[in-house]
Image (tube, rainbow, N blue to C red):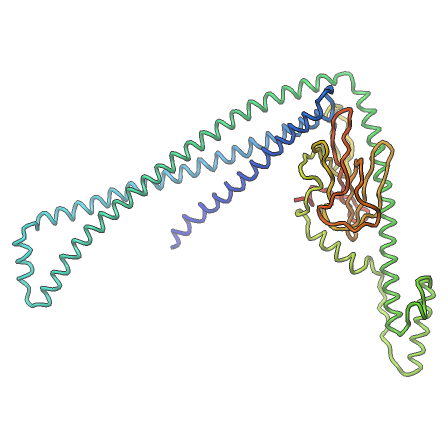
Amino acid sequence: MCIFLLFVVPVNGQKDNKEKLQLQKVRLEDEIKLANVILREMREDRKESISSLEALGQKLRIREQLLRTLNRELKLLEEDLQAQQGQLKELEQQLELQKQVYADMIRKAYSNRDQHTVLMFILSSQDFFQAVKRVQYLKQIAKARQKQIERIAETQFAIESEQESIRKKVKEKEAVIERQRREKEILLKEKKEQESQLASFSGKEKEIQEDIKKKQQQRDQLNQEIQRLIAIEIKRAKEEALRKQIEDEAKSVGLVKNKDFTSKTTNQQLKTLITKAREAKAAAGKATEAPVERLPELSAESQLLAANFSANKKKLPWPVDRGLVIAKFGPQSHAVAKGVVWDNKGIDIASEKGSKAKAVFEGEVISILRIPGANKAVLVRHGNYFTVYSNLTEIYVKQNDKIKVGQTIGLIFTDDENGKTVLHFEIWKDTEVMDPQGWLQ
């Protein structure tokens, strides 16, 4: 049993690895197809742009990743082939041994082929019971020979199946090698295309740097506004939670809302009323619980929403149906202007023309922003977490709307000059910006 488990577990592990590689290969192939669509849209009736160069660079990275996946797949196939060839050798050795055993049986049967000898073997028994046992023994020998024939047939069938499996595996390996060859040729061609595009931007460094500076200013302006709104929202949420705590305390000492106090009663005035009510009860001999001094950060509902958002880290759906990350989180080196670095507070996701932004989690729309030159952005609150969907041209939600996972938020803007359809997406925890790719599935 131990030997069996040692043999089976690695095989199952290889099967799981192969299935993961197949899924990864399918995903990468789909991303390459999408990159081709995006590049085609960017290039229709337009000159080469930095945007198309960025998309081409991303496609190159995906193709290199696909080649690495094919290399791992080839390695697994070679390991499978080696294991199967070892199994085939063991089966062939087993068959040879079975044939030898059967040959020995036939030789013995041949030496005792005389019916007279068999009859004398039975008749020479000391008693009837021994004669019965000898008849049974002869039957068992005949049965053992038949069983050995069946074993030989089974082993031969197993050898043929193993040989067929090896032939299929060899063909599969050859197909992967051919696919590798084709992908390397395409990669080489695309790298030459990238070099040609880079050469076309020669002498335009000053113009590019000015464009980068302008876009960075727009992004900085957007992020400053987001930080301001988040700070306001956090303050408001804390004030609401504190107010609820004080009102709950007022109710616990017998004060009735809209009778003893209203929503216009200040926190300090309400605390004074609570103290008087507690003193009155104490004078009447009725003990009341001392208040627990704590400053709540969020309401119970907001805390639950934040906890659910946090629990879904690495599981959140993407804010577009299909897309390519053309700019990651953090400092980014420019595709053309060497030495120029710009800071990205989120990720930029290129998609097809007409693509829509979708909510990654349930929450509440707290603001719709408009930054000059940066189109529109939607800020959604999820407890003390916030998501930002920027570069939208049409908005399908309103401020204070409660939204669900996957709900369409807006239409992503397509730049007529370069055909670029890119969603800028951010995730914040309080006033700290986070890498969205660490949260998306």
